[in-house]
Amino acid sequence: MNEGWTRLGLIAGGGALPRLVAEACAADGRLGCVIALQGFANPADYIDPVVRTIGQFGHVVKDLRAAGCDAVCFAGIVTRPDFRSFVPDMEGAKLLPKLLGAAVRGDDALLRVVVKAFEDQGLKVVGADELSSSLLAPEGLIGGEVDLDAHRGDIAKAMHMAAAIGTLDAGQGAVVCDGLVLALEAQEGTDAMLQRVAGLPENIRGTRQRPRGVLAKRPKPQQERRIDLPVVGVATVEGAAEAGLAGIAVEAGAALILGRDAVDEAARRHGIFVVGVSAHS
Amino acid sequence: MNEGWTRLGLIAGGGALPRLVAEACAADGRLGCVIALQGFANPADYIDPVVRTIGQFGHVVKDLRAAGCDAVCFAGIVTRPDFRSFVPDMEGAKLLPKLLGAAVRGDDALLRVVVKAFEDQGLKVVGADELSSSLLAPEGLIGGEVDLDAHRGDIAKAMHMAAAIGTLDAGQGAVVCDGLVLALEAQEGTDAMLQRVAGLPENIRGTRQRPRGVLAKRPKPQQERRIDLPVVGVATVEGAAEAGLAGIAVEAGAALILGRDAVDEAARRHGIFVVGVSAHS
Image (cartoon, rainbow over all chains, first blue to last red; front, side):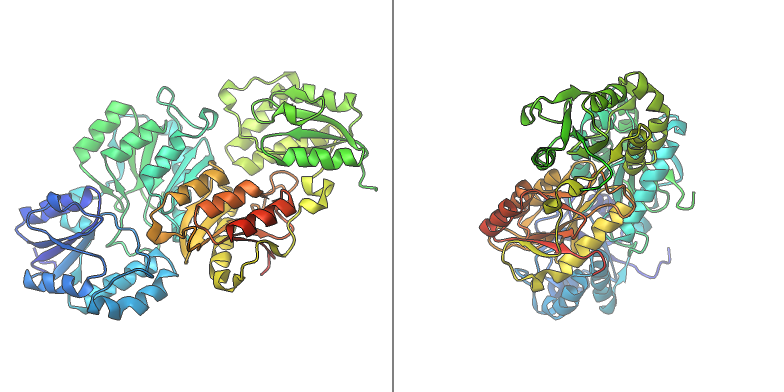
């Protein structure tokens, strides 16, 4: 392989994704170290992780260099800090003015500053999907065995809504049922949004007995795609089923599927679908 | 007064608005009858209401005529029915194909069909604000005594987000804190959205001790404004305070304030603001 790097440091947030990335990278023999972000990652998920807070930029760069890393991958859930009670180390403090300036412009601007800071240290920033191409959602049916024809309208509208709120840098997910927008995702995250849909009146949503409606997840059109691609896992499938949805749509090539077999099995068990849709369809 | 009608029928949904409308209209001696929609309105709020389901279009028109009404006002919260288990009367059944066609295009299309159906019966459809101009939000500080300067950025961004999701026919409300979009409203309603914000991590939102962030509510730019203007009442103020927000912004002349004095008192008590912002500012 010749991707311009030899050894990778994983900066791990919450959820199941960073562990899959660590496994894929370790299997290649290219995992230099794991930085488990305090309050987000579970250190027990990794072998000899370094635990750091998100303010310790200088320490993290030293950790990466000490482990011989020339590349870095961000994976997993991290919520933005309250910059008024943020405790950076010395290098982190130098970044603070830029971070504060970007923060008010939105999440995407903030992530770009973080990416740029690591690149300025000579580290290549690598997307999780580049480490394990099996993570990336393909086009077509990914999970379940449902005839999609009855759901084309909701799939298209939910994908449109997700793109629209992404353009606003607000979120990546939307739920549509029979043309009605049931929920738009912002900082609560997909799981909480699905729980909210499960609590809506049954006259406007589906049920487990009669599923209808679609969750769409797609990246913000303008976002830094090496960080924060939308993720669908077994928990997403279960949340969607609980909310009475008929299925989940993601943008093909721009979403991560955490465990294809497990997602397919869960989708079949719950009688719902997971589908990859071309961005241009 | 010469507004082209003499006697009004109020079609009441849930919440406090329809009762205020009934009182304002009764004080003028122009209230012909109240139709309390079953499952939404509390019939005990009204004197001699007629209780009807939302499918009983033919009965409602007859009720209005029997009471000598030549105008009708829709006020209060109504969620859309599940048209697959909808039980209309005979006149309601005639409307059903149009309703079904509109439903998949969104709430606004659906409301336009309902308005048109009443107009086709020779009834004038009147907005709640036309019955009681004191309900309409003015420009400037409506509640509280907070210096707005520190909050201009969040007010502008939250108003922008609310307009954007309105353009999508998804909802009327948005919450922004220090430039970050915390929540977008769809079918869950404002109160549930504020509860959700109250549950977000404290690092990205305000607290009662250090309020920050703004809830904005404004009509969908393209919506039928005689039905479904955004509403702010004491419960909204309390929900916003509970969510740690600094205040609430509405579009001046395009939102209803339920009890100006009570809203101002609640805003002062909680140390937050309610402000009317020009649509063009």
